[in-house]
Image 1 (cartoon, rainbow, N blue to C red):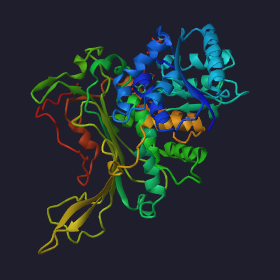
Image 2: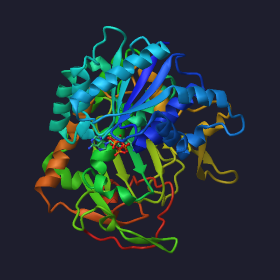
Image 3: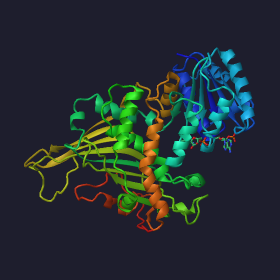
Image 4: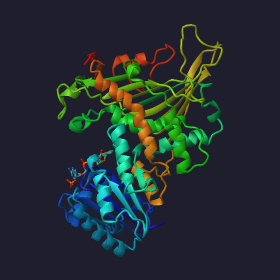
Length: 508
Ligand SMILES: NC(=O)c1ccc[n+]([C@@H]2O[C@H](COP(=O)([O-])OP(=O)(O)OC[C@H]3O[C@@H](n4cnc5c(N)ncnc54)[C@H](OP(=O)(O)O)[C@@H]3O)[C@@H](O)[C@H]2O)c1
Protein backbone atom coordinates (compact mmCIF):
# COMPACT_ATOMS: atom_id res chain seq x y z
CA UNK A 1 0.00 0.00 0.00
CA UNK A 2 1.19 3.58 -0.71
CA UNK A 3 2.72 5.57 2.14
CA UNK A 4 0.54 8.43 3.38
CA UNK A 5 0.46 11.52 5.59
CA UNK A 6 -2.90 12.37 7.17
CA UNK A 7 -3.04 16.14 7.51
CA UNK A 8 -5.89 17.00 9.87
CA UNK A 9 -7.06 20.61 9.83
CA UNK A 10 -8.98 21.50 12.99
CA UNK A 11 -6.83 18.92 14.82
CA UNK A 12 -7.45 20.48 18.24
CA UNK A 13 -11.21 19.97 17.85
CA UNK A 14 -13.75 17.48 19.10
CA UNK A 15 -14.04 15.36 15.97
CA UNK A 16 -10.28 15.02 15.44
CA UNK A 17 -9.57 14.08 19.05
CA UNK A 18 -12.63 11.91 19.68
CA UNK A 19 -12.96 10.10 16.36
CA UNK A 20 -10.34 10.67 13.69
CA UNK A 21 -7.07 10.10 15.52
CA UNK A 22 -8.46 7.13 17.52
CA UNK A 23 -9.65 5.65 14.19
CA UNK A 24 -6.17 6.06 12.66
CA UNK A 25 -4.69 4.49 15.79
CA UNK A 26 -7.09 1.55 15.50
CA UNK A 27 -6.07 1.05 11.86
CA UNK A 28 -2.41 1.15 12.91
CA UNK A 29 -3.07 -1.37 15.70
CA UNK A 30 -4.86 -3.73 13.33
CA UNK A 31 -1.97 -3.34 10.86
CA UNK A 32 -4.22 -1.94 8.15
CA UNK A 33 -2.08 1.15 7.57
CA UNK A 34 0.84 1.20 5.20
CA UNK A 35 4.26 0.83 6.86
CA UNK A 36 5.07 4.41 5.96
CA UNK A 37 2.58 6.78 7.50
CA UNK A 38 2.45 9.94 9.59
CA UNK A 39 -0.27 12.14 11.08
CA UNK A 40 0.09 15.91 11.10
CA UNK A 41 -2.37 17.96 13.17
CA UNK A 42 -2.91 21.54 12.04
CA UNK A 43 -4.96 24.27 13.74
CA UNK A 44 -4.55 27.59 15.51
CA UNK A 45 -4.09 26.44 19.12
CA UNK A 46 -0.53 26.57 20.25
CA UNK A 47 0.54 23.00 21.06
CA UNK A 48 3.97 21.46 20.87
CA UNK A 49 4.14 17.92 19.44
CA UNK A 50 4.35 16.56 22.97
CA UNK A 51 1.42 18.62 24.26
CA UNK A 52 -0.70 17.56 21.29
CA UNK A 53 0.16 13.89 21.82
CA UNK A 54 -0.85 14.19 25.47
CA UNK A 55 -4.13 15.85 24.53
CA UNK A 56 -4.92 12.99 22.16
CA UNK A 57 -3.60 10.12 24.29
CA UNK A 58 -5.43 11.16 27.45
CA UNK A 59 -8.79 11.65 25.74
CA UNK A 60 -11.25 8.98 26.90
CA UNK A 61 -11.92 7.88 23.36
CA UNK A 62 -8.25 7.16 22.79
CA UNK A 63 -7.87 5.28 26.05
CA UNK A 64 -10.79 3.07 24.98
CA UNK A 65 -8.80 2.07 21.91
CA UNK A 66 -5.81 0.96 23.93
CA UNK A 67 -5.73 -2.72 24.62
CA UNK A 68 -5.76 -2.75 28.44
CA UNK A 69 -4.94 -6.43 28.81
CA UNK A 70 -2.31 -6.83 26.10
CA UNK A 71 -0.92 -3.35 25.98
CA UNK A 72 1.71 -3.05 23.30
CA UNK A 73 3.69 -0.05 24.46
CA UNK A 74 6.14 -0.28 21.57
CA UNK A 75 3.30 0.00 19.08
CA UNK A 76 1.83 2.98 20.98
CA UNK A 77 5.22 4.69 21.07
CA UNK A 78 5.62 4.10 17.36
CA UNK A 79 2.24 5.75 16.77
CA UNK A 80 3.19 8.71 18.97
CA UNK A 81 6.44 9.16 17.03
CA UNK A 82 4.41 9.52 13.85
CA UNK A 83 1.98 12.03 15.35
CA UNK A 84 2.98 15.69 15.19
CA UNK A 85 1.36 19.12 15.20
CA UNK A 86 1.87 22.63 13.85
CA UNK A 87 -0.07 25.74 14.80
CA UNK A 88 -1.04 28.08 11.94
CA UNK A 89 -3.62 30.77 11.28
CA UNK A 90 -5.91 28.57 9.22
CA UNK A 91 -7.35 31.42 7.15
CA UNK A 92 -3.95 32.94 6.39
CA UNK A 93 -2.56 31.76 3.00
CA UNK A 94 1.05 32.63 3.87
CA UNK A 95 0.96 30.27 6.84
CA UNK A 96 0.60 27.30 4.50
CA UNK A 97 4.30 27.66 3.70
CA UNK A 98 4.79 26.18 7.20
CA UNK A 99 2.51 23.28 6.29
CA UNK A 100 4.56 22.67 3.14
CA UNK A 101 7.86 22.74 5.02
CA UNK A 102 6.53 20.32 7.65
CA UNK A 103 5.17 17.95 5.00
CA UNK A 104 8.49 17.92 3.17
CA UNK A 105 10.24 17.08 6.44
CA UNK A 106 7.81 14.29 7.40
CA UNK A 107 7.80 12.94 3.86
CA UNK A 108 11.56 12.48 4.00
CA UNK A 109 11.64 11.17 7.56
CA UNK A 110 8.98 8.51 6.96
CA UNK A 111 9.65 7.86 3.27
CA UNK A 112 6.06 8.71 2.23
CA UNK A 113 6.34 9.37 -1.51
CA UNK A 114 4.21 12.53 -1.71
CA UNK A 115 0.77 11.02 -0.86
CA UNK A 116 -1.25 13.33 1.38
CA UNK A 117 -4.80 13.22 2.72
CA UNK A 118 -6.03 16.66 3.79
CA UNK A 119 -8.89 16.17 6.24
CA UNK A 120 -10.99 19.29 6.80
CA UNK A 121 -12.32 18.89 10.33
CA UNK A 122 -12.96 22.59 10.86
CA UNK A 123 -16.02 24.80 10.93
CA UNK A 124 -17.59 24.69 7.43
CA UNK A 125 -16.78 28.30 6.54
CA UNK A 126 -13.17 27.12 6.06
CA UNK A 127 -14.07 24.46 3.47
CA UNK A 128 -13.35 26.89 0.62
CA UNK A 129 -10.44 28.68 2.25
CA UNK A 130 -8.26 25.67 3.08
CA UNK A 131 -8.27 24.12 -0.45
CA UNK A 132 -7.48 27.55 -1.93
CA UNK A 133 -4.58 28.06 0.52
CA UNK A 134 -3.24 24.56 -0.17
CA UNK A 135 -3.41 25.24 -3.92
CA UNK A 136 -1.61 28.57 -3.49
CA UNK A 137 1.41 26.56 -2.32
CA UNK A 138 1.09 23.80 -4.92
CA UNK A 139 -0.04 21.32 -2.26
CA UNK A 140 -2.89 20.13 -4.51
CA UNK A 141 -0.55 19.04 -7.33
CA UNK A 142 -0.08 15.35 -7.97
CA UNK A 143 3.35 15.48 -9.65
CA UNK A 144 4.89 13.37 -6.92
CA UNK A 145 2.21 11.20 -5.31
CA UNK A 146 -1.54 11.74 -4.91
CA UNK A 147 -3.34 14.45 -2.94
CA UNK A 148 -6.84 13.79 -1.56
CA UNK A 149 -9.21 16.13 0.20
CA UNK A 150 -11.74 14.86 2.76
CA UNK A 151 -14.56 17.24 3.62
CA UNK A 152 -16.79 16.87 6.66
CA UNK A 153 -20.48 17.60 6.78
CA UNK A 154 -22.31 19.90 6.41
CA UNK A 155 -21.61 20.24 2.70
CA UNK A 156 -23.44 23.50 2.03
CA UNK A 157 -26.27 25.16 3.87
CA UNK A 158 -28.74 24.91 1.00
CA UNK A 159 -28.71 24.13 -2.74
CA UNK A 160 -27.08 27.39 -3.76
CA UNK A 161 -24.25 27.20 -1.23
CA UNK A 162 -23.63 23.51 -2.04
CA UNK A 163 -23.31 24.31 -5.77
CA UNK A 164 -21.00 27.21 -4.98
CA UNK A 165 -18.88 25.10 -2.64
CA UNK A 166 -18.53 22.34 -5.25
CA UNK A 167 -17.55 24.91 -7.86
CA UNK A 168 -14.93 26.56 -5.67
CA UNK A 169 -13.33 23.37 -4.43
CA UNK A 170 -13.21 21.96 -7.97
CA UNK A 171 -11.13 24.94 -9.14
CA UNK A 172 -8.31 23.52 -6.99
CA UNK A 173 -9.02 19.79 -6.69
CA UNK A 174 -10.48 17.40 -9.27
CA UNK A 175 -13.70 15.51 -8.41
CA UNK A 176 -11.60 12.33 -8.19
CA UNK A 177 -9.49 13.97 -5.44
CA UNK A 178 -12.53 15.02 -3.37
CA UNK A 179 -14.04 12.76 -0.69
CA UNK A 180 -17.23 14.17 0.89
CA UNK A 181 -17.62 12.19 4.06
CA UNK A 182 -20.95 10.94 5.32
CA UNK A 183 -20.03 8.74 8.26
CA UNK A 184 -23.32 6.82 7.96
CA UNK A 185 -21.91 5.30 4.78
CA UNK A 186 -19.05 3.91 6.86
CA UNK A 187 -21.47 1.91 9.01
CA UNK A 188 -21.43 -1.81 8.26
CA UNK A 189 -25.21 -2.00 8.26
CA UNK A 190 -25.59 0.74 5.66
CA UNK A 191 -23.13 -1.07 3.41
CA UNK A 192 -24.95 -4.29 4.20
CA UNK A 193 -28.10 -2.82 2.65
CA UNK A 194 -26.41 -3.30 -0.72
CA UNK A 195 -25.26 -6.83 0.12
CA UNK A 196 -28.68 -7.82 1.48
CA UNK A 197 -30.29 -6.64 -1.72
CA UNK A 198 -27.80 -7.59 -4.39
CA UNK A 199 -26.12 -10.73 -3.02
CA UNK A 200 -29.32 -12.61 -2.16
CA UNK A 201 -31.68 -14.11 -4.70
CA UNK A 202 -34.49 -14.15 -2.14
CA UNK A 203 -34.92 -10.42 -1.48
CA UNK A 204 -34.35 -8.71 -4.82
CA UNK A 205 -37.34 -10.30 -6.65
CA UNK A 206 -39.61 -8.92 -3.90
CA UNK A 207 -37.93 -5.49 -3.75
CA UNK A 208 -40.50 -3.49 -5.71
CA UNK A 209 -44.01 -2.06 -5.87
CA UNK A 210 -45.56 -5.49 -6.48
CA UNK A 211 -44.61 -6.82 -3.05
CA UNK A 212 -43.73 -3.85 -0.86
CA UNK A 213 -46.53 -1.98 0.89
CA UNK A 214 -44.41 0.87 2.21
CA UNK A 215 -40.96 1.75 3.56
CA UNK A 216 -40.31 3.44 6.90
CA UNK A 217 -37.09 4.92 8.21
CA UNK A 218 -36.75 6.03 11.80
CA UNK A 219 -33.73 7.91 13.03
CA UNK A 220 -34.20 8.71 16.70
CA UNK A 221 -31.78 10.26 19.14
CA UNK A 222 -32.60 10.09 22.85
CA UNK A 223 -30.28 12.98 23.70
CA UNK A 224 -31.43 16.57 23.68
CA UNK A 225 -29.23 19.20 22.00
CA UNK A 226 -27.69 19.99 25.41
CA UNK A 227 -24.86 22.51 25.12
CA UNK A 228 -24.82 22.36 21.30
CA UNK A 229 -27.93 24.56 20.98
CA UNK A 230 -26.07 27.47 19.37
CA UNK A 231 -24.81 25.22 16.54
CA UNK A 232 -28.02 23.21 16.21
CA UNK A 233 -30.34 26.17 15.99
CA UNK A 234 -28.75 27.20 12.67
CA UNK A 235 -29.24 23.73 11.30
CA UNK A 236 -32.28 21.70 12.40
CA UNK A 237 -33.20 18.07 11.76
CA UNK A 238 -33.83 18.44 8.01
CA UNK A 239 -30.36 19.84 7.31
CA UNK A 240 -28.49 17.99 10.06
CA UNK A 241 -29.78 14.45 9.45
CA UNK A 242 -32.19 14.14 6.54
CA UNK A 243 -30.39 15.91 3.68
CA UNK A 244 -27.23 13.85 4.15
CA UNK A 245 -27.39 10.62 6.16
CA UNK A 246 -31.02 9.69 5.57
CA UNK A 247 -31.05 10.53 1.87
CA UNK A 248 -27.96 8.36 1.44
CA UNK A 249 -29.77 5.49 3.18
CA UNK A 250 -32.82 6.06 0.96
CA UNK A 251 -30.54 5.86 -2.09
CA UNK A 252 -29.17 2.51 -0.88
CA UNK A 253 -32.65 1.11 -0.32
CA UNK A 254 -34.09 2.39 -3.56
CA UNK A 255 -31.35 2.27 -6.19
CA UNK A 256 -31.28 -0.11 -9.15
CA UNK A 257 -28.59 -2.81 -9.23
CA UNK A 258 -25.30 -1.19 -10.28
CA UNK A 259 -23.48 -2.70 -13.25
CA UNK A 260 -20.39 -3.27 -11.08
CA UNK A 261 -19.41 -2.99 -7.42
CA UNK A 262 -17.27 0.09 -8.01
CA UNK A 263 -17.51 3.73 -7.05
CA UNK A 264 -18.64 5.05 -10.44
CA UNK A 265 -21.35 2.43 -11.00
CA UNK A 266 -22.77 2.58 -7.47
CA UNK A 267 -22.72 6.37 -7.33
CA UNK A 268 -24.37 6.61 -10.80
CA UNK A 269 -27.28 4.48 -9.57
CA UNK A 270 -27.61 6.45 -6.33
CA UNK A 271 -27.78 9.69 -8.28
CA UNK A 272 -30.46 8.22 -10.58
CA UNK A 273 -32.53 7.24 -7.55
CA UNK A 274 -32.23 10.67 -5.91
CA UNK A 275 -33.33 12.24 -9.18
CA UNK A 276 -36.41 9.99 -9.23
CA UNK A 277 -37.75 11.14 -5.86
CA UNK A 278 -40.88 13.16 -6.54
CA UNK A 279 -40.22 16.73 -5.35
CA UNK A 280 -42.51 17.94 -2.57
CA UNK A 281 -44.02 21.18 -3.88
CA UNK A 282 -43.96 24.14 -1.53
CA UNK A 283 -47.76 24.08 -1.32
CA UNK A 284 -47.70 20.41 -0.28
CA UNK A 285 -45.20 20.92 2.52
CA UNK A 286 -47.83 21.39 5.27
CA UNK A 287 -49.48 18.05 4.43
CA UNK A 288 -46.36 16.00 3.62
CA UNK A 289 -43.78 17.34 6.04
CA UNK A 290 -44.24 17.67 9.79
CA UNK A 291 -41.79 19.68 11.82
CA UNK A 292 -41.61 19.52 15.59
CA UNK A 293 -39.71 20.84 18.57
CA UNK A 294 -39.35 19.12 21.94
CA UNK A 295 -40.99 20.75 24.93
CA UNK A 296 -40.14 20.35 28.64
CA UNK A 297 -41.11 17.09 30.25
CA UNK A 298 -40.36 14.78 33.14
CA UNK A 299 -38.40 11.59 32.61
CA UNK A 300 -37.69 9.32 35.58
CA UNK A 301 -38.93 12.12 37.86
CA UNK A 302 -36.29 14.47 36.42
CA UNK A 303 -37.33 17.59 34.57
CA UNK A 304 -35.94 17.76 31.04
CA UNK A 305 -35.52 21.14 29.35
CA UNK A 306 -37.56 22.04 26.33
CA UNK A 307 -35.58 23.03 23.22
CA UNK A 308 -36.24 26.74 23.73
CA UNK A 309 -34.74 26.53 27.22
CA UNK A 310 -31.44 25.10 25.97
CA UNK A 311 -28.27 27.16 26.14
CA UNK A 312 -27.73 29.17 22.94
CA UNK A 313 -31.29 28.67 21.63
CA UNK A 314 -33.46 31.77 21.11
CA UNK A 315 -36.67 31.74 23.17
CA UNK A 316 -38.74 32.04 20.00
CA UNK A 317 -36.73 29.58 17.91
CA UNK A 318 -38.65 27.77 15.16
CA UNK A 319 -35.82 25.37 14.34
CA UNK A 320 -37.14 21.82 14.05
CA UNK A 321 -35.70 19.15 16.34
CA UNK A 322 -37.98 16.63 14.64
CA UNK A 323 -38.99 16.14 11.03
CA UNK A 324 -41.32 13.56 9.53
CA UNK A 325 -41.95 13.23 5.79
CA UNK A 326 -43.92 11.23 3.30
CA UNK A 327 -42.80 11.02 -0.32
CA UNK A 328 -42.86 8.85 -3.42
CA UNK A 329 -40.26 7.72 -5.91
CA UNK A 330 -41.34 8.07 -9.50
CA UNK A 331 -39.78 5.10 -11.25
CA UNK A 332 -40.93 1.63 -12.28
CA UNK A 333 -39.64 -0.10 -9.17
CA UNK A 334 -41.26 2.19 -6.62
CA UNK A 335 -44.32 3.72 -8.32
CA UNK A 336 -47.07 4.15 -5.71
CA UNK A 337 -45.01 2.91 -2.72
CA UNK A 338 -44.99 5.51 0.07
CA UNK A 339 -41.76 6.22 1.91
CA UNK A 340 -42.13 7.56 5.46
CA UNK A 341 -39.10 9.02 7.20
CA UNK A 342 -38.79 10.61 10.64
CA UNK A 343 -35.81 11.93 12.51
CA UNK A 344 -35.67 13.66 15.86
CA UNK A 345 -33.90 14.49 19.05
CA UNK A 346 -35.14 13.89 22.61
CA UNK A 347 -37.00 10.75 21.58
CA UNK A 348 -37.47 7.64 23.76
CA UNK A 349 -34.39 5.80 22.53
CA UNK A 350 -31.43 5.98 20.18
CA UNK A 351 -32.25 3.96 17.11
CA UNK A 352 -31.88 4.09 13.35
CA UNK A 353 -33.76 1.46 11.43
CA UNK A 354 -35.32 0.77 8.07
CA UNK A 355 -38.57 -1.18 7.99
CA UNK A 356 -39.68 -2.74 4.72
CA UNK A 357 -43.31 -3.80 5.07
CA UNK A 358 -44.44 -6.37 2.51
CA UNK A 359 -47.98 -6.53 1.19
CA UNK A 360 -50.54 -8.78 2.78
CA UNK A 361 -51.35 -12.06 1.06
CA UNK A 362 -54.15 -11.53 -1.47
CA UNK A 363 -56.67 -13.42 0.60
CA UNK A 364 -56.57 -13.26 4.37
CA UNK A 365 -57.51 -16.84 4.99
CA UNK A 366 -56.40 -17.03 8.61
CA UNK A 367 -56.98 -13.53 9.78
CA UNK A 368 -59.10 -12.84 12.82
CA UNK A 369 -62.16 -10.83 12.00
CA UNK A 370 -61.11 -7.85 14.12
CA UNK A 371 -57.53 -7.72 12.99
CA UNK A 372 -57.43 -4.95 10.41
CA UNK A 373 -53.76 -4.97 9.67
CA UNK A 374 -51.13 -7.56 10.09
CA UNK A 375 -47.57 -6.27 10.30
CA UNK A 376 -46.03 -9.70 10.30
CA UNK A 377 -44.28 -9.54 6.95
CA UNK A 378 -41.55 -7.05 7.64
CA UNK A 379 -37.83 -6.88 7.09
CA UNK A 380 -36.28 -4.67 9.77
CA UNK A 381 -32.78 -3.47 9.11
CA UNK A 382 -31.28 -2.06 12.29
CA UNK A 383 -28.54 0.43 11.45
CA UNK A 384 -27.76 1.32 15.07
CA UNK A 385 -27.48 0.21 17.83
CA UNK A 386 -27.60 -3.64 18.02
CA UNK A 387 -26.90 -3.70 14.30
CA UNK A 388 -28.58 -6.52 12.43
CA UNK A 389 -31.63 -7.77 10.55
CA UNK A 390 -34.96 -9.26 11.56
CA UNK A 391 -37.34 -10.93 9.14
CA UNK A 392 -40.82 -11.12 10.64
CA UNK A 393 -43.45 -13.54 9.45
CA UNK A 394 -46.58 -15.28 10.69
CA UNK A 395 -46.56 -18.78 12.22
CA UNK A 396 -49.38 -20.96 13.32
CA UNK A 397 -49.95 -21.03 17.08
CA UNK A 398 -49.82 -24.72 18.08
CA UNK A 399 -53.13 -26.28 18.95
CA UNK A 400 -56.63 -25.99 17.64
CA UNK A 401 -57.60 -23.60 14.87
CA UNK A 402 -55.34 -21.45 12.73
CA UNK A 403 -54.33 -18.59 14.92
CA UNK A 404 -51.36 -16.69 13.51
CA UNK A 405 -48.54 -15.33 15.62
CA UNK A 406 -45.65 -13.04 14.61
CA UNK A 407 -42.20 -14.57 14.83
CA UNK A 408 -38.84 -13.27 13.71
CA UNK A 409 -35.63 -14.67 12.31
CA UNK A 410 -32.82 -12.43 13.29
CA UNK A 411 -29.15 -11.82 12.79
CA UNK A 412 -27.04 -9.50 14.97
CA UNK A 413 -23.56 -8.31 14.13
CA UNK A 414 -22.65 -8.93 17.76
CA UNK A 415 -23.01 -12.67 17.04
CA UNK A 416 -19.84 -12.46 14.95
CA UNK A 417 -17.63 -12.64 18.03
CA UNK A 418 -14.41 -13.33 16.17
CA UNK A 419 -14.77 -10.45 13.71
CA UNK A 420 -13.71 -6.87 14.38
CA UNK A 421 -16.52 -4.62 13.15
CA UNK A 422 -14.64 -1.44 12.19
CA UNK A 423 -15.93 1.93 13.32
CA UNK A 424 -17.33 4.05 10.49
CA UNK A 425 -14.35 6.41 10.45
CA UNK A 426 -11.87 3.53 10.34
CA UNK A 427 -13.44 2.06 7.24
CA UNK A 428 -13.79 5.43 5.53
CA UNK A 429 -10.22 6.54 6.25
CA UNK A 430 -8.89 3.26 4.93
CA UNK A 431 -10.90 3.71 1.75
CA UNK A 432 -9.39 7.16 1.10
CA UNK A 433 -5.89 5.69 1.37
CA UNK A 434 -6.94 3.08 -1.18
CA UNK A 435 -8.50 5.75 -3.39
CA UNK A 436 -11.90 4.05 -3.18
CA UNK A 437 -14.66 6.66 -3.17
CA UNK A 438 -17.59 4.20 -3.21
CA UNK A 439 -18.66 5.12 0.32
CA UNK A 440 -18.25 8.87 -0.18
CA UNK A 441 -20.91 11.20 -1.56
CA UNK A 442 -20.28 12.51 -5.06
CA UNK A 443 -20.79 16.24 -5.70
CA UNK A 444 -23.77 15.75 -8.01
CA UNK A 445 -25.65 13.57 -5.52
CA UNK A 446 -25.08 16.06 -2.68
CA UNK A 447 -26.62 18.76 -4.87
CA UNK A 448 -29.50 16.46 -5.82
CA UNK A 449 -30.24 15.82 -2.13
CA UNK A 450 -30.30 19.58 -1.50
CA UNK A 451 -32.60 20.00 -4.53
CA UNK A 452 -35.19 17.77 -2.82
CA UNK A 453 -34.87 19.55 0.52
CA UNK A 454 -34.91 23.07 -0.94
CA UNK A 455 -38.70 23.55 -1.43
CA UNK A 456 -39.29 22.40 2.15
CA UNK A 457 -36.81 24.95 3.52
CA UNK A 458 -38.34 27.62 1.28
CA UNK A 459 -41.89 26.84 2.37
CA UNK A 460 -40.92 27.05 6.06
CA UNK A 461 -39.04 30.30 5.48
CA UNK A 462 -41.84 31.97 3.51
CA UNK A 463 -44.76 30.72 5.59
CA UNK A 464 -44.21 31.16 9.30
CA UNK A 465 -47.81 30.02 9.77
CA UNK A 466 -46.72 26.45 8.96
CA UNK A 467 -46.79 24.95 12.42
CA UNK A 468 -43.91 23.80 14.54
CA UNK A 469 -45.59 21.08 16.57
CA UNK A 470 -44.51 20.55 20.16
CA UNK A 471 -43.71 17.09 21.53
CA UNK A 472 -42.68 16.36 25.09
CA UNK A 473 -39.04 15.28 25.34
CA UNK A 474 -38.97 11.49 25.58
CA UNK A 475 -41.83 10.82 23.15
CA UNK A 476 -41.96 9.69 19.53
CA UNK A 477 -42.47 13.17 18.11
CA UNK A 478 -45.61 15.25 17.47
CA UNK A 479 -48.82 13.18 17.49
CA UNK A 480 -49.81 14.67 14.16
CA UNK A 481 -46.99 12.73 12.50
CA UNK A 482 -49.17 9.64 12.63
CA UNK A 483 -51.48 11.42 10.17
CA UNK A 484 -48.77 11.22 7.52
CA UNK A 485 -49.58 7.55 7.47
CA UNK A 486 -53.14 7.97 6.33
CA UNK A 487 -54.41 4.47 5.94
CA UNK A 488 -55.44 2.51 8.97
CA UNK A 489 -53.44 -0.37 7.55
CA UNK A 490 -50.15 1.19 8.58
CA UNK A 491 -48.57 2.60 11.74
CA UNK A 492 -45.10 3.74 12.70
CA UNK A 493 -43.03 0.98 14.25
CA UNK A 494 -41.91 2.28 17.63
CA UNK A 495 -39.19 0.04 19.03
CA UNK A 496 -40.15 1.09 22.60
CA UNK A 497 -42.84 3.19 24.24
CA UNK A 498 -42.72 6.85 25.34
CA UNK A 499 -40.46 7.58 28.27
CA UNK A 500 -42.77 10.17 29.71
CA UNK A 501 -46.35 10.08 30.79
CA UNK A 502 -46.48 13.78 30.15
CA UNK A 503 -49.17 14.55 27.61
CA UNK A 504 -48.08 18.09 27.14
CA UNK A 505 -48.34 18.17 23.33
CA UNK A 506 -48.58 21.80 22.35
CA UNK A 507 -48.53 23.73 19.13
CA UNK A 508 -45.60 26.14 18.85
N1 LIG B 1 -17.89 16.53 16.35
C1 LIG B 1 -18.53 15.61 15.68
O1 LIG B 1 -18.87 14.54 16.22
C2 LIG B 1 -18.87 15.82 14.22
C3 LIG B 1 -19.65 14.86 13.56
C4 LIG B 1 -19.91 15.03 12.20
C5 LIG B 1 -19.41 16.14 11.54
N2 LIG B 1 -18.67 17.07 12.21
C6 LIG B 1 -18.15 18.22 11.46
O2 LIG B 1 -16.72 18.18 11.52
C7 LIG B 1 -16.20 19.49 11.63
C8 LIG B 1 -15.33 19.55 12.88
O3 LIG B 1 -16.12 19.26 14.00
P1 LIG B 1 -15.67 19.61 15.49
O4 LIG B 1 -16.78 19.23 16.36
O5 LIG B 1 -14.32 19.05 15.75
O6 LIG B 1 -15.60 21.19 15.41
P2 LIG B 1 -14.96 22.22 16.38
O7 LIG B 1 -14.41 21.53 17.59
O8 LIG B 1 -15.92 23.32 16.53
O9 LIG B 1 -13.78 22.80 15.48
C9 LIG B 1 -12.61 22.10 15.12
C10 LIG B 1 -11.43 23.01 15.20
O10 LIG B 1 -11.53 24.04 14.23
C11 LIG B 1 -10.79 25.16 14.67
N3 LIG B 1 -11.56 26.40 14.51
C12 LIG B 1 -12.70 26.77 15.13
N4 LIG B 1 -13.07 28.01 14.76
C13 LIG B 1 -12.14 28.43 13.89
C14 LIG B 1 -11.95 29.64 13.18
N5 LIG B 1 -12.80 30.67 13.30
N6 LIG B 1 -10.87 29.75 12.36
C15 LIG B 1 -9.98 28.74 12.27
N7 LIG B 1 -10.11 27.58 12.93
C16 LIG B 1 -11.18 27.42 13.73
C17 LIG B 1 -10.56 24.99 16.17
O11 LIG B 1 -9.18 24.76 16.37
P3 LIG B 1 -8.21 25.99 16.69
O12 LIG B 1 -8.95 26.94 17.56
O13 LIG B 1 -7.06 25.30 17.37
O14 LIG B 1 -7.86 26.55 15.36
C18 LIG B 1 -11.33 23.74 16.53
O15 LIG B 1 -10.66 22.96 17.48
C19 LIG B 1 -17.39 20.43 11.68
O16 LIG B 1 -17.61 20.99 10.42
C20 LIG B 1 -18.56 19.54 12.06
O17 LIG B 1 -19.76 19.99 11.47
C21 LIG B 1 -18.39 16.92 13.53
